[in-house]
Image 1 (cartoon, helix red, strand yellow):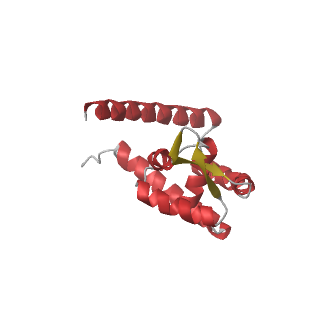
Image 2 (cartoon, helix red, strand yellow; image 1 turned 60 degrees about the vertical axis):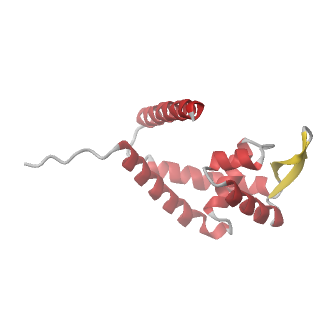
Image 3 (cartoon, one colour; image 1 turned 135 degrees about the vertical axis):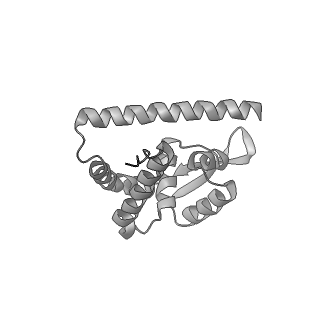
Length: 151
């Protein structure tokens, strides 16, 4: 009998992420915003006042791609750039009043997706899963920070 090796952690997480992205796209298709735009709004809502380079890092995107995305979102009234008081050349990013209710409207969609993904897990299993993934993320973030120190 041939043993099937267990899926690697990376492949399993990648599959979960891919499937969640697809479901999010299906659930949010009528909003008029792309997944990248929703991600930008969600990240910015937790880090208002961040600069584009910092936002690019949070989104794991190239700075020029974030610049173009922010340009489009600023033109559409979702975000605004304000001068950085400490550096005249720098600009800080903020949500507009248009973005805040849209994010609130998206919360039920996100919760529905979360519930769908966690179906079959009891509350303690959900907690354990999220806690374990939080530890994995912290471990990898620490490893990345240490690697960056030696670069």
